[in-house]
Length: 350
Image (tube, rainbow, N blue to C red; front, side, top):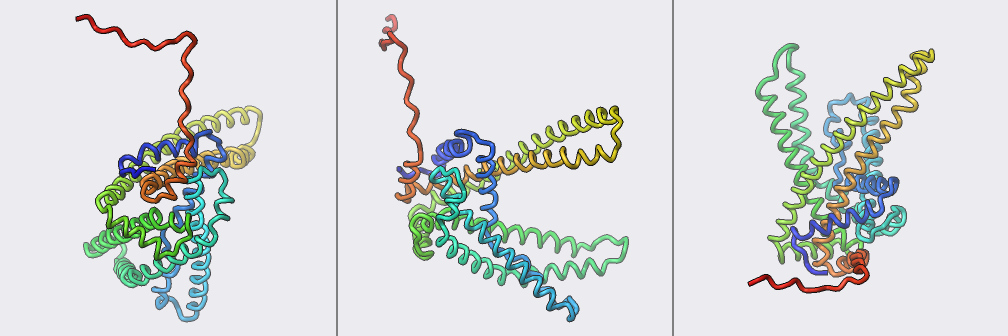
C-alpha cells in the first residue's frame, strides 16, 4: 500500500465506511457496529471522577467519612471496570474496521492480552493527570461554592464569582481538549502496534515518535484535518438527528391524536389510553430515537477510524497489507453489447 497524504486518505475512508455499514445495509448489524464505536470512545481517557469527592472529605462530618470513602472506592471500582470494557472495545472496533468484521464477540476475545496493558497504561496516565489537576480544580470549586453560599437572597452574583466561573470553564475545556488530543494520538498511532504485533508500550511509542520526527508537517495536517472532520461530522449528524427526531415526534403526535379519538369514540377511559401510550408508543419512540442516534454517531466514528487506518497504512506495512486484503477489488466493467466495435472518431473537417 502506498503512503497516502492526510488529504488523500479521506476518499478511501468514505468508501470503507460505506463498505462496512452499508454493503449491504442490515438494520441490526449496522446499529450494533455503531453502538460498538460509540462505547469504544468511552475508553479514550480515564478520569476517575469519584475520587474528586475525596478532596471535599474535610467538609463531611467525621461520623460519615468512612461511609463516604467506601462509597467513593466502590464507585471508582465500578468506573474502572466499565472503562476496561470500553478500552477493550477499542481493539475490537479497530479489528472490525480493519478486517471488515461483522461480529463483535470474536474481535473482543482476540485482544485480551493487549487490552490489559493498554488499559493499565491509560489508568496510570489518568491518575497522574488527576493528581496534577485535582488539587487546583477542587480548590477552585470549593472557592466558588463558598462565594455562592455567602450570597444573600435576591442579590446578584459579584463579578469575582462570574469571573471564577468563566475561568474555571475555559481552563477545564483546555485541559479536557488536551487530554482528548493526547488520547486520540495514542489510539491512532500506538494501539495498532499493540493490536497487530502485541509489541511493548515502549516500542509502540518509539514508532510513533519516529513517525513524528520523520513527517512532522504531514502529521500536523492529519491532526488538524481529523479534528476539523470530526467537528463538521458531529455538527452534521446533530442536525440530521434533530430533523429525524422532529419528524418522528410529529408522526407520534399524529398517531396519539388519532388513537385518542378512536379509543374515545369506542368508550375507552383516559387511564387505559395513558397505559397504552406508555406501554406501546413510548418504547417504540425511544427505540427509534436511540437507533438513529447510535447509527449516525457510528457512521462518523467508523469514518474517522478508517481515515486513521488509511493514513497510517502506507507507513505501517503490516497494517497496509491487511487493509488491501480486506478491500474487495473493483467491480469488472460490463461486457460491450453484441456487435459493438470501437471506432476512432472522424477527423474534424479542415
